[in-house]
Length: 117
Image 1 (cartoon, rainbow, N blue to C red):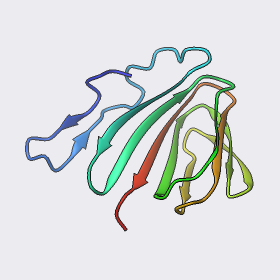
Image 2 (cartoon, rainbow, N blue to C red):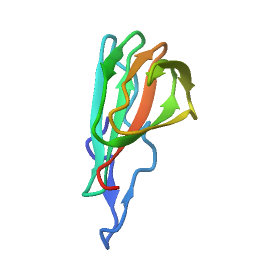
Image 3 (cartoon, rainbow, N blue to C red):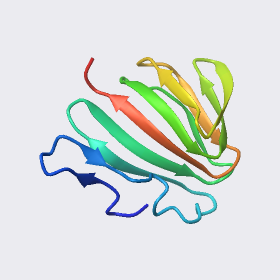
């Protein structure tokens, strides 16, 4: 992903990213890339790209989180349920909920972790 992906407004009240897909030409075989695109006292936003077949094994987070799928298709487990995610899929997770992701195709996903209640 492009190093100049995020632009902060003059008054510092917002971040603007025209497209999370900018800078992603081909997702390299056998790779998962992550890039923090925003981080403040309330939320951390991380853009992920997965090559087909790559996965994040089951894990938890102490934060409430949202997965927003931008591109591709993945198998996701959330609290023991198996679901399919594709472009447009939105998944909200409570803190400490076990989850995993397995990319079927090249996947681009945005993760939002909410630090403050």
